[in-house]
Amino acid sequence: MISPVSLGALLAAASLVEASFDRNIAYRSPSRRHPTLAVPLSHVAKRQSGDVYSPDEVNFTHGVASGDPYADSVILWTRLAPTGDSVASDLVPDGVVPIYGDPDGARPSNRAACVEFKIATDPQVTNVVDQGRAYTSSDVDYTVKFEAGNLQPFTTYYYQFNVCNSDKKSPIGRTKTTPAETQTVNRNINFAVYSCSNYPDGFFNAYGNVARKDSVDYVLHLGDYIYEYKGDSSLRNPKPDRETYSLYDYRARMGSYRTDPDLLMSHASFAWIPVWDDHEVADNSYKNGTGNSSGEVFRKRKQAAVRAYFEWMPIRQVDMDDSLRIWRSFSFGTLLDLMMLDTRQYDRDLTVLNGFAGIGGNSKEVEKLVDHQNRTLMGFKQEAWFYDQLTRSSQRGARWRVIGNQVIFSRMALGILGNRPFNHDQWDGYVANRDRVFQHLADGKINNTVFLSGDSHAAWVSDLAWLGTRSYDPATGEGAFGVELAGSAVSSDTPVGSWMPNLITKGLSAWLVKDNPELQWQDLYYRGYFEISVGYEDVMARFYGIPNPKVRSSDEIKIAEFLVHNGENRLARNPTVGGGKAKAGALKNGKVE
Image (cartoon, rainbow, N blue to C red; front, side, top):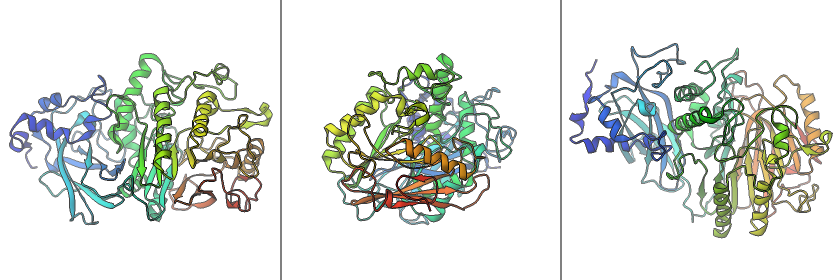
């Protein structure tokens, strides 16, 4: 075995040691300003015994990823971790190395791993435009995040990592920058939109299918990238074998998910723009707790979850003064502005922790609060930022405003409940906050607004109608403020369970479409994803269903297609809504093929 390389031989001064850690921005996220999230580099550098793992002692364990693209830079991610006798194979899946800080008492390592990156314009990574070196350690779970710069707008790049001073290399990844803010885009920009990938519920075929088709430019993930539950499946279960609470737990859970080959393929193929929902922390979390954790237990749990998420995901920390902030925006030339909201973790008021539709748990308590004027889903600081982003986008002349959001925005009611909303964990539980969004769109005469939503494990397509305040015609869409496109789950069970036959789910979908005037299409049967193709004259949405997520396969069905024309602020009717193309669920005023 090659003897360890001395840090002193590599770097002449302690200040350079710290700088070499600093290039790895995993140490900077989520925040150095937060006392329990910070990783002081001076302490990290001081603790190192002077040894770096040799190339024989480390491996690239979880592929490569890129994300949060700008016109001139992008975040690159990998994990370079030690292997060998220290591997606790009973704690980790498929030979993935263990994570320090586990409940069994393992301590942070005194050794570091050295990694280099290159990013180039060619698939062989020879025409290099940026490169760099940094160290990683157990303090950040051996994750590595570089910001690659010196890039050109709306350009495809290829990148690769290697162990310092060796030929041991990672797989090659591909990424893409965004168009410059003032750039006229010469073609449609395409996105794949995902949410809700529960590892025990099925394989992640939906991620791999888009990579196999190579049909998009970027991936948007609206949350529930992981689930915190203890696995209880005959198909596959993630580590650790318990519900996640500690930093070790969340790191191990992220590592388990990142062994799925289709997820690895997607990360290596596209730049991701992700945001979390509730299960990245715990089910139905809000600012003060969840159904099974509150107080100091919840505070520590959330901090552990947030830290692990930022270590493992290729994202930027956009505001160092706000240590738990993930909401942020991206410009894609003059074509669109993308706003990624956090409608779950940031500052959400009390939600339904247990129960449903006013039955059981605290659902009756929440039902009494839904109309309170000071109630917020987003937190007032995020609300102010969101309204400002909408205004700035409209004033600068971007053609579309696309909003990545977790929970269903549109009102969803059932006739058997007296046409009352049935899920107060969605925007229906925060009516005043939704009214403020509509009011801002109306006051600013802001057009071409498209909400993208996840969370529900079902597919919904609606006009954005301010029911009860502004007149709306379901037949024509007149009076709408925009559209909402909500996708099903990658693998998580549907709201009615995976055992429900399609014939029955179609009837339930028809019931929902009938009871909700703004709801134009709904499907409860298929898991899957959707793609949106954004051009200056229209937005096209295509929904795909995975026939059987319990089997690893590339099979999929295009189950619906919808069109939104520039300036119309509603789904196109030609001759029926969305062009009348649907092969699943129920379509208002149209026939499902």
